Picture 1: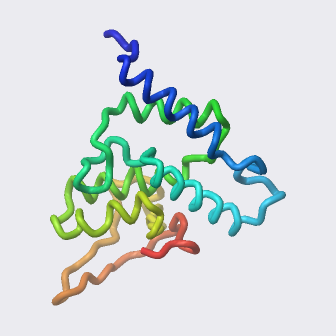
Picture 2: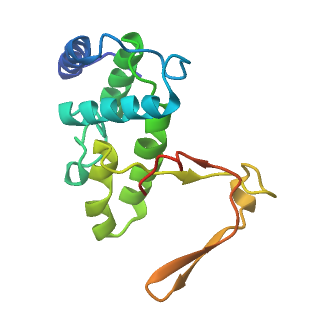
Length: 172
């Protein structure tokens, strides 16, 4: 398997590197730093993701019709390498939305959902949260008991989650 970059991918790397050099805030502090209150950390991450979105550096592999760029995973890898080398924002919080919620909606959502949600996830117009562990299941997804039941025009969720990521800052 040949993993060398194509000329277009090398150009993409140079473009990402140049943009990062110009765009990373000079007063950037590592996320989790006690110097920055937690709420401000999320706002910094949200602002950073918005900047990535406006520059076209987020949702690289998502289809263009849903707000992405329709590129390959090699460009995504290049972006991740360059952001790590530049010591830019942590991507773990972004990954929950961009890496989980968005692709799930694109794969399984209705056309209306695909048109409504992915671009707002990428732009950080909406912040999503994700329910995780259940009291009797932990992280064992096969034993989850929480269910959503259709009740007219709405879904009723029955069950209990132990914690939910980003619930305190989510909009959706």
